[in-house]
Structures are given as structure tokens and as C-alpha cells.
Image (cartoon, rainbow, N blue to C red; front, side):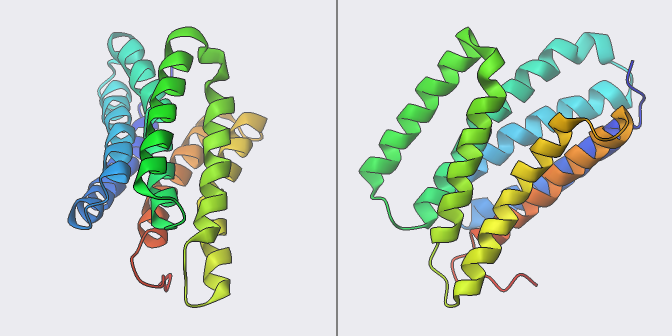
Amino acid sequence: MPPAHYALSEILIVLISIYTLTIFFKERRFYSFVGVFLISCAAVIASIRFGINYQSELKSFHQLLSAISLLFGIPLIVIEIMKRSNLLNNKIIYLVLLIAIIIGLYIFLQAKHLTITIVASWLIVGAFFSVLISREHALMKIVSGIFFSLIIINLIVRRMELFDPSTSWHLYHIGIAVWLYLITRILKQNETKYV
């Protein structure tokens, strides 16, 4: 049974999510708002599950919300990145949204073993479009791509099981929290200064 300190890095995600949701609501970035909200819901339940030892009672609910956050939350954030690049018109964005929902529902209902593969594919698309966001300096395009790609590196490190379970858990969830903050920087309207 995982120890109670597993809740700490989940709480960090919740706190960063509150900040991120505030930014996205003010900037009317509703795709990313909903995406982060789904991720934060999973983190809130995980915080309760581990923090006050409701591990058995909330295990299934936590797993359900985690799957939803991966299959729907991540694609919504990627769609916001695609929208921010200004390369696609709204009709194509709506089509991508429809595709994301259909794929997410299929994986959720019929092929959960493909979850990580689908999520990784969305993240690669997101990294690509984050580089295409217009900046005053080309270097900032590269920085955007690096910032977005941190979540892919985080996912790979988690799957490689390089660390003991507790360290791996906290590094992975701290990585998610950092990534959520960096998304606010990537999506800034003006040139991102990264300070």
C-alpha cells in the first residue's frame, strides 16, 4: 500500500492547477482550462486517497479520473496549443476536438491498454505545434518546444522505472506540476520571456 507522503506531490499539482486555471480563465483559453481541470480533479482525489488513507475506497475512482485526464485533458491542452499557433482555422480545430473525443471514448471503453500510446502521440503533436507558435525571436520557438517536451521526457523516465517507486512517483508528479506552469508561459499572447 503506497504511503501517505504520495499525497504531497499530488497536492503540488492541485496548487499549480489553481494558478493555471486562474490564468486560463482570465485569458479565455477554455480548451486548456478544461484540460487542466480534468488533471486537477484526478490530483485532488489522489491527494485525498493517499493523504487520509482512503486508498481502497478511492482507488477505482482515482484510476477512472486519471484515465479521463490522460485521454481527454491532455488532448484539450494540445488543441489549445494548436489553436495558439494560428495555423489552423476554427473549423479544423473543431474537427480535431471531435476526433480527440471519439478516440478518447474508444480507448476508454475498448482499448485502455493503448492509453499511453495515444497520450504520447498527442504530446508529440503538442510539442510540434508549440514550436510553431509565433514569437519575435526564433530562439523562443525552440524554448517553447523544449518546455512542452518536458512532459514527454517525464513520461519516458516514469516508464523506464529508473528510480524506486516513491522517488519515481514524486518526480513524475512534480514534473506534471512544472509542465502545467510552463504551459501558461507557452500560451502567453505576446512573446514569452520565460522569466
